Amino acid sequence: MSFLQLDSLAKTYPDGTEAVRGVDLCCQRGELIVLLGPSGCGKTTTLRMVAGLEKPSAGRILLEGVDMASWPPQRRDVGFVFQFYALYPHLTVRENVSFPLGNRALSADAQAQLVEAMAERLGIEALLDRYPRQLSGGDQQRVSLARAMVRKPRLYLMDEPLGTLDADLRLAMRELIRDQQLRDGVTTLYVTHDQEEAMSLADRVVVMEGGTIRQSARAAEVYADPADLFVAHFIGSPGMNFAQGEVRDGAFRAEEFVWPLEGAWPPGALTLGIRPEYVRLASEGALRGEVLVEEYMGSCRYVHVDTPCGRWVLRSEEETGSQPGEQVGIELEADGVRLFDGQSGRRIQ
Amino acid sequence: MRGLRFLFVGVYLCLGTLPLLWLGITSLKERPDTISVHLKWLPSGAAGAEDDAYFAATLDAYRQLGVVYAGADHAFYHYLKNSALIGLLSTLASVFIGTSAAYGFSRFPIPGAKDWLFFILSTRFLPPLAVVVPVLMMYREFDLQNTHLGLIILYTVFNLSLAVWLMKGFIDEIPRAYEEAALVDGYSRLQAFRLIIIPRAASGMAVTGVFCLISAWNEYGFAMTLNNQDAVTVPVYFAGLQGNVQGIPWPQVCAGVLLFVAPIILFTVLVRRHLLRGVTFGTLKQ
Image (cartoon, rainbow over all chains, first blue to last red; front, side, top):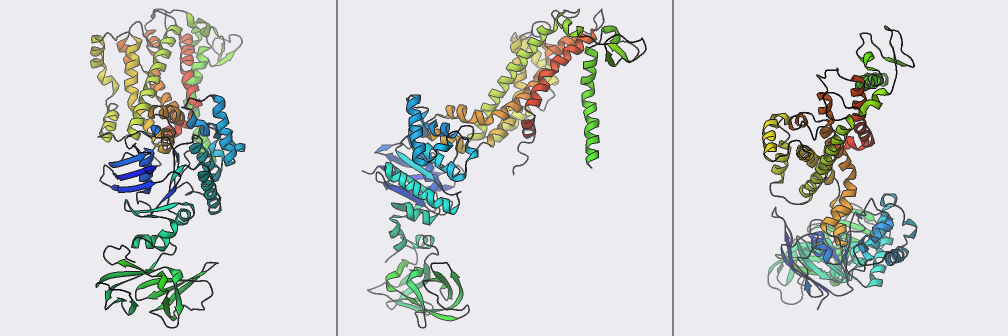
């Protein structure tokens, strides 16, 4: 039995907006699950329903087998980290961190000890007597983490905790969160729209769009074998290259681009996708196009090529010497080719 | 431009403070100096000539506030106590009920919330004195005339619309995330309200309190109509001294009025920085 299970969870707002449409998700104990998707995909609403801050319209939330969908938040024993920290501004850091302990049968000494221990763990001992407004964003988020963790809750729920931090601070905080989570082994749901963050943190990435789960798998799998066109396009930066065409005479055809298919394929609409690292410039090639621009990214280059199938991006480790306006051929590596159903967008192979 | 500003503020300051200043000067006089045909406006140690501007300053008027004058049953302090009791309790009630109602309107989806809020505001549309007679009849029915409770209820009700609207502005500005954090931290909605919202809304409550206190403190019409003995407030007491056979005791009246307005001035100065936010709330949004 899974530790946390969302069963056909749905949320429709009074104005008719369907924020979440039937989400099914199973999490094992100790797993760190990242809900990833564009804004408005329902990931935050899902998280808030697990916390009890939104009332589900339908479905169950089973924690250790007990449905808590109708419980008020204070009964659920979860730690929540908010995007904008939500530290109580009129309380000191010490009071903020000990706030979740205030309602428990704990002596003042025991409380103080827990707070001190937590502060030491997150490196905020020196800040205990300051007020939140006197802290930097990174320190505020540390305090907010400490507040969520001090009670040793059954779940950590994190709503874009790094969304407002600077890039280098994000990296450090990401490691901190992962370390602390591994140390406690507390099952965690983590919401973000940053795929890099999702890939690096997650035991499992759950890609959401339009209120539904598009794919739930390990990061490498989501990247290499996206479940559908949305995931293929959304994951990876830049996303997958696509060619929309059809199956005819045992091959995929789009304009003059032909890609032979193995096995027997029924005729019909098909979309071919391939990631930028599996395509390269060549004098000859299955696909031809005109170079638009070459982007230098430090460790690699992206060459944008205007093809009859739309704009394709090629990743290259070395200088390609291509000039804007030049006619070039594109060569595909068979390993990288993914085929999607032209109608449903689901991946076939 | 700067000079013009100073001129404007200066003139306004004089206009505003002159009555207070005059009250202060008069409270230091003896009664004959207050009704002298010659303008006496410069305090001095000894009495001046009959026709110059000097008068002998004395604090006698303040000492004599405890005297019971003809036209009243008690001395000034008795009425000040009434005013304080009624003013403070009605202010507390307005602010407390107003804050609670505003929290509800701010945080929960209430069917027809806009209409309710408009209804609450609409209780201010009628000039209060227009309902004196109906209120009088109701109060007679419930034996609320001549009671402190009667005036407390009345002022609370009159100030409530202002309190709800002002407090809603303040509470709307408090991010929901604070309460949500408190809820997941294991506290009930009521505890979150008490521990998180009230401290955050404190300055707003002080502002609302000032407005409620001022209107309850200064109210005259109802206090006069509904009372003639037990719960007479200071404004009614002073008005009652008119038609006194011994003449109005002007120095004592002025001394009393000064003491009466002092707490309001003090309270207002204390929260003046929040007052501006209170009266401009909502104007920067949208």
